[in-house]
Length: 79
Image (cartoon, rainbow, N blue to C red; front, side, top):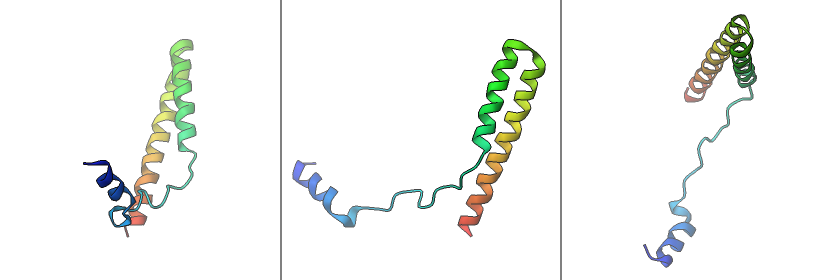
């Protein structure tokens, strides 16, 4: 592609498309809880198995909640 063709392609709005995603996901606290669970897991590896298990439980709940929320949100937008 020559520079002139490239310039024409980039400046011709008929070749443009809308950016995705058109709508951003809602804010959520699940990433915070996932990070907190990871911190507890690492701390538990260093300190004791009880803290590590608690971190694993928090991470599992947070990941499940976050994925569930995203799936429901996607389903709402597709309807």
